Image 1 (cartoon, rainbow, N blue to C red):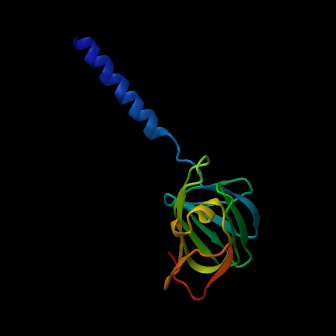
Image 2: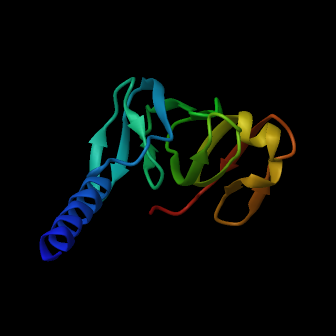
Length: 152
C-alpha cells in the first residue's frame, strides 16, 4: 500500500514537472523584419529573425530604421513601423472552434492590423490599447498611431 502511494506521488511530481517545463504555445511568428527589431521576453532583449516565435507577454520593439510583420495563429496580421513598441498582453486561440481572445498594447509608434479568425467570430474578444484609449474591433483593417508614447 505504501509503495502504491509512493509510486502515485512520484508519478504526479513527474507529471507536474513535465507540464511546468513545457514552453507555452507561440501566439504567432515573425514574417518580415527590416532594420532594428527586437523582442523583449522575460527581461532579455532578443534579436529578431524571420520565423522567430512571438509569445504572449512579448514586447516587440522597432528602431528608427525598423519595421516588422507578425502573423498570429488566427491569421491576424500585425505590421509595426519605425520607433514602435507593441506588447502582446494576451493571446489564446482554439484552432478547431476559432474561439479565443487577444489583447495588445501599442505603447508608441504605428501598428497596422488586419484582423483574423478571433475577431470574425467574437469581435468583443479582441482589444488594442494605447496610453490613452482602448479600441474594440468592429472592422477588419485599421491603423493605430501613438505619437510621443511612453517607453516601457
